[in-house]
Length: 219
Image (cartoon, rainbow, N blue to C red; front, side):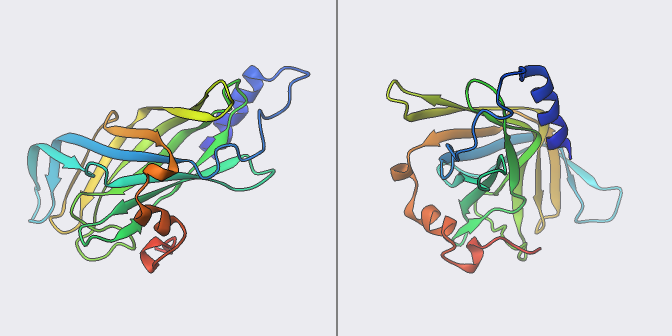
């Protein structure tokens, strides 16, 4: 519901009497890929593996890995004004898997044909671990907070980049094997537009549902 409130406020502030309700409804960002990475240092991570009071670990570094995760925007179809942001990562077993907790982004009525959410999210598997379906010893790192995707176009009108704004949120990690987790301030999320030919074939295959690890989990 927070997403709907955000969009309503933006529309009330920016839509004129003769302006269309939405800037576009054409799936202009459908299928777009971004490379992704989340890194953070948790100031005070909590180790819940032993009896309480639980121990604290100071300045614990967590990483999803370099060139290990990607995300794709998927349009929900005409009249929806909604895109799904789905992540795909290579896990510690060398398999590509779909991330859990996919987020929705809404078309914004601005001159840049942007997408946004006041409380979006994206989650990646921790480097060397597994996440999809919550197997034994799963581990993830994720961002939750405001998200805005602002596309850029060249003189020919082709998509040339996407500027991603992420703030007013947090980075959250959990390792079910070690029972260690915690939160840190936003700032560790990096999403960068990439052409499809720069995306590993394994990620593309996973987006097409190549294996059970690539199908949306019911968990």
